[in-house]
Image 1 (cartoon, rainbow, N blue to C red):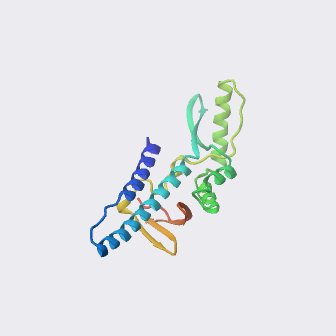
Image 2 (cartoon, helix red, strand yellow):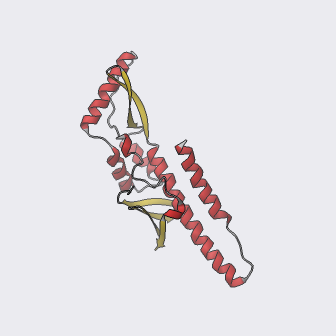
Image 3 (cartoon, helix red, strand yellow):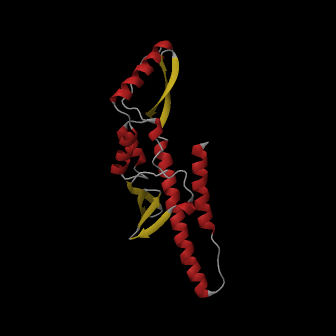
Length: 192
């Protein structure tokens, strides 16, 4: 449901921005057109961040294991780190995507715990055990993103072809290439 609502919100922002309202007088119409274009570009940049974050968060999925006979779930990347970064490279700069990917991964102790649970589940299901190479901390996935922000609550500025989107301590920097936007910088921590 969350994924669908994020995609729906992003699509609504783009459609709303594209709809716009015209004016009848020449100067007023030109001024309104410029404001409409700015607003449309800002909404589209904001929607691009929402979609990029949603795409990033979609890289992780729950995998079931067993601990002491009880089912537990761990979140694992659905692609290798290299493949994930390559997949995300259409909406994220590769270095920024790598930094984000590594920020949500757990330590060796969590990885060992997850593999032990996956091995126990494989034995119970009489299947071959294949250890995972990485496991994410569930609470970190999406915790440092603007997913819950309303467009009205974010600050968006544009300078030299770059958009800067700020919200509660987070700062995204995007570039626009044709009709595509790419996150080239992400700084800060989301303040609750």
